Image (cartoon, rainbow, N blue to C red; front, side, top):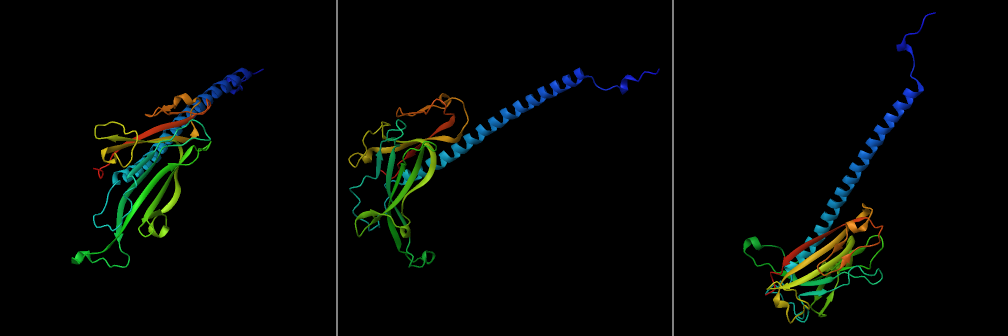
Length: 265
């Protein structure tokens, strides 16, 4: 009786089990590696996204603060001397979801544009009339939302020289408060004088002492990335701690810019 060649024999059950076990271990290792890389990529992407969003908003506010107090000598607008060039209202930060507020700020400066009824012949040496505007730019946060946190809002008002009051009109390029960025945890404004000291109360009596305004924005990721909130807990310069429930795993970053108030002397 002839015996079959061993090469023609099939695999035993033990060999099959060993092969399945080794394959399973390799698949598990590959999945774990993929999961770690994917999680890391998600964190990097979210960090870049919130950093860019935060810098865009802080940059927008900073440009307005830099313009604060700018006036055209030829401007015929009157009646705004009683308003502070920069007015800062301090909020509470994140303490209670029903009463939470960020800091708010309003900024006044002049702008101008060519009169729509006048043709621009400035290249021929002809003086071109301008339409002067006095603007009041305001930034504040909406009421806190459990999912999106605060939402930064912006309003532009123009000075009505006839009615002698601030007004909004789309034809004048001014508008009521509009949302510009959500997922905000806090927004702070700190004014400093010429000696680098914090001005506790800023008004018309000491506005000429103002030299810089520090703007800080705490922004969080749109999704949870960590298991524990204490990994991203932030305490601001005003001592306001940004944290939520123990199971909150959102990534948070604080972005700070110091702006010179070059038009205030």
